[in-house]
Image 1 (cartoon, rainbow, N blue to C red):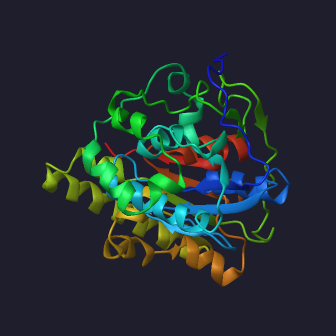
Image 2 (cartoon, rainbow, N blue to C red):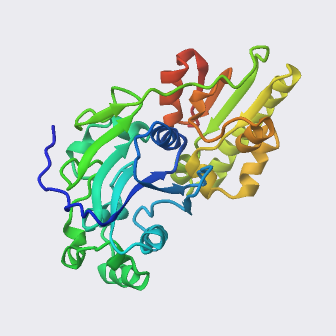
Image 3 (cartoon, rainbow, N blue to C red):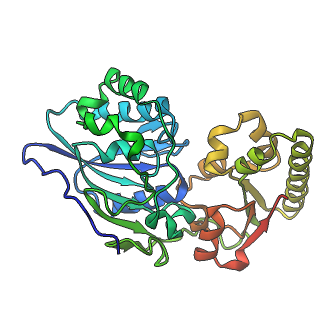
Length: 341
C-alpha cells in the first residue's frame, strides 16, 4: 500500500473547518449525497458543483474543476475563496473525485488543506495505474498562473506556498495520491474500487423504485458522444453520417416505445450535457423526454446515478461509466450497449 511521506499541516483550534465536496457527475452526486445524509461530513459544508450538477441546498456552481485551464481553475478557486475569506483562519477537508489536474496540484501546496478523501468517479477508480504511477502533467504558464491567483486573492486565502508554486511544473501529478500530506482515505460503491489505497469505505447505495410496477416499458437512453465527436472531428461527412444514423435509431426506438404506451427518457453524459449546444441535444429530446424534464414532471428525486432508478432497460451509446453501474446495480440483462464505430 502507498504510504504517507508527509504530515498534514497542523490544525489550529481557532480556525473554521470546512468540508469541501466537489461533484460533477451522477455517481459523485450519489456518493456525496450519501456522505452528507449519513453524517460522514461533520464540519461546515461547502458544496461545489460542476458540469451542470444540481444540489438542493447552498452550493457553488462552476463549469468544472478547471482541468489544465488557468482561467477555469482560478474561477473554481476564486468562488471557493469567496466563502473562505469571511473567516480569519480556515482549514479544508477535501472530498474530490481525483487530484490529477491543475487544481489538485495547487491544493497539494496549499497551507489550508487538512485532509484529502477521494470519491469514486467511474472506471478511473478501478485503474491501478491511477494510484501507482504519476499522471500526464501539462506544463502551464507559471507567471500567468501566479498573477491570476494573486489578482483574484486566491494565493493568500489558500496560503499557497510561493516557492513551490514557482516550481509547479516540476511537481508530479497524481490522479489518486496517497503520498500527499493529509491523504485520509476514499469512498466508493464497490469493493473493486481504489484497490491500492488505504482506509477505503464501501458505501451501501440504495436503489430507488420510482417506476410503478404496472409500467413495463420505461427506457433510459444514455448517449456518450463527446469523445467520439472529438475522434472524428477532422472527417465531418463521416461524423455527420454516424450522428444521423444515431438520430434515426432513436426515432425508431421512440416510435416503438410510444406505440406500446411506454416512455423513452434521454440523458446525455455529463460532459456531453455541459459542452454540446442546446440545439444539438434538442434534436434528441424532441423524440423522447429529457432526463431532467422527466424527473421534474413526475416529482422524482433527481441527480443520482441512473442505474439506481428502476428503468426497464438502459440503452448506453458508446462506452461510459454508466455501463459499469448498470451492471453492478441492475444486472447485465438490464443494459443494451450500442457502439458507434
